[in-house]
Length: 193
Image: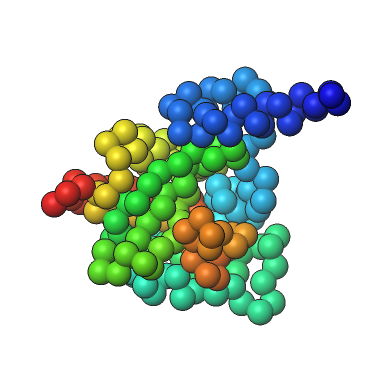
């Protein structure tokens, strides 16, 4: 039998911990890095963040999943819908911790559950260079509370527009549009009502 890489063993072990409340600590101890892909943009620490308009624009999951990156999309800089903060009401399908230490909120349109998108909350331990670290921490507390009670709550999500790598198989929008980072998460109605 061949020797396995220690990193591969750690990642394999951590895959089983994704739903566990100790994931943040485990990832920190294993020295798994925080997010990598467009990380400065994801935590509002990029040079373009000063141009983001923080007055939320009301939208719906149905509208948001139709947003597409512009043809000249440059992953190193913000573009188009990434300069705006959006507010939408959605059904929270699930909350999952990811290996990059973000919490993924799987959202569906309250009027059409087949329409889905993702919103992400970075780990505040990974965002010390962001002026919004406290907002991320508050949103994560709400998300963790909702996760402990299971999915199905009606929520209001306020977050910055972001084009991520394509996640359709896992519930993402076809054009890769997400709300990342989430700045505020509010429970409107518990599950089952």
